[in-house]
Amino acid sequence: MTQTTVSIATLGCKVNHQESEKLADDFNGLGFTIVEQNEPADICIINSCTVTSMADAKTRQRIRQARSKNPDAFVCVIGCMPEVSHDAVSAMEEVNLILGSAEKERTAALIVRQLAMTRKELSPTTTATAAAPRYGGRTRAFLKAEDGCDRYCAYCIIPYARGPVRSKPADEIVSEATGLLSSGYREIILTGINLARYGADFIAQAESDSLPLYKLLKQLTDLDRAREYRIRLGSLEPTVISAGEAHAIAALPRICPQFHLSLQSGSDRTLKAMERRYTAEDYLDIISALREIDPNFAVTTDVIVGFPGETDEDFSESLAFVERAGFAKVHIFPYSAREGTRAANLPGQIPESIKKARAAAMQEAGNRSAKSYLDGHIGQSRRTLALGPDKTGALRGLTDNGIDVRIPQKAYDFPHNEFFDLILTPEIVRKFE
Image (cartoon, rainbow, N blue to C red):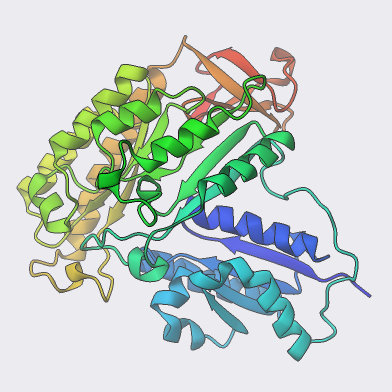
């Protein structure tokens, strides 16, 4: 019997990527063979994103590409887009099966069951494999701690796609992290849809003397005192975390000095309209607290331009904020109305031409900020993890604060998956992760 091949195309956030990794492991364990997206496959899975209309368009494009390249394949769409736009996905003739976010944990089993009913010739081998996780290369591993969001910002569809906050018990997370370290992983990327809200579903904040996420991280940073490893956090919400809490987390040993904090706007008036629950000054206080820990603490962010009612003055305030905040990387999103959100019905919708112009100006500011951030590291030493050689033979590395480096083959003698101190030079600094 020919072993069935599976490809997984992943769009969107780090949580989606973690879930795809877990899905690949599930299929490996059932005896299937995982192949790259551009390789022929018997089963094509598209792990969708719906955060913007552009994300929806990219998901539809991936679906069509999967069918075009694999005419006889079983095509399954999973994740956020089916939760929000099920009818739109089901109308696509390329799709054989649709599964929502709540079914991601059982995706492999559900596909196998569907295949058994409809395509008996596409079956896994009877011998399950004990293959190591496909992605991460035993160097960096994603660990999902939380799913869902209960903040309901005016523009955001994700709470409707992902549901309320659901936290994994701390003992399960600690057990998973211990297993990853024992398997040889040296960096764990802790992810969640609203990671700062970890524990909100099983512990009342008023009853806690500290942020539940902080308590979890204290456990994770003290798992193996004899081994060097590090914890990198996914996106944190300034709607949840205060400057003091951010400082306490950043001060823990093994926590990477790199946080993604979604700004969305540097204008207080726009933040209020977005229902973001903080001011621009609150956000700056968090940055200041982090840079007390490390002057080169990397802060990356998201910014929305063209939100309904955003005036030229509001945009100028947001642009000025980005120019002075010292971001390592800025992701720019022209506002995209999502049916079902409050912002979709707000007055003052901004013309696309203005959104485009504002996005271009904001991107220029973000690019200048990123260049300035990288330039400020030249001549400095950063703790770096060796990720292995690239196609040219150069050593790929990642600094503790997220800078991607390439060291020429003849200039290093560092084994894969080991930490070392690296003096950064213009020749080896590539970009921010």
